[in-house]
Length: 112
Length: 115
Image (cartoon, rainbow over all chains, first blue to last red; front, side, top):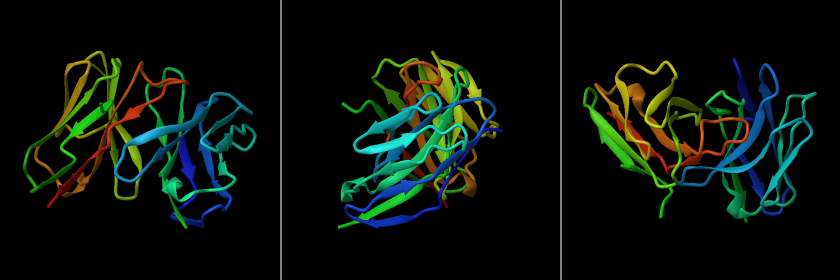
């Protein structure tokens, strides 16, 4: 079945460091891809998305590019802040599938 | 106003008890969901409802029974609670059933601990 695999956490970085969180997927066909973020004590929020190959989603300084050839959707940010500390979820969905399939989440901690 | 609100935030109970979690959305969305997040942070869909009709039931035990009295509410009732039911349960909603472009709005979660 369809699945999403993220890099194991937790990830700990210093403020202003470069961030990459890897995400790869297994699916038949070409899904839409999403990154959701869960701040402490809150529900998940959509961070960015891409709906077709080579699309780049971006929001709040985060970016991810849909790579069909490597079935990947890695999340990057050039300079992280303490406020970026959260759990990040990669997810996929197909038109008409009626559900999102999530990865296992990666906990990110940014130290001042 | 909170878009998707669920209560209670924390629920501690004994094995064998029956409990309910309530969820309400004020976004006017047609579709609502229940997701379960286990201790390793894996997040899996349990149910989805569209306009009060069950759309998805992901092989969840019969002890779990969702109820949607109207499209703004989707409650989750759990009978005969077991230790393995301990998790964080998230309610979510979307304008339509999840598709290529659909954005989900999540509640803040209910942490269920079964002792």
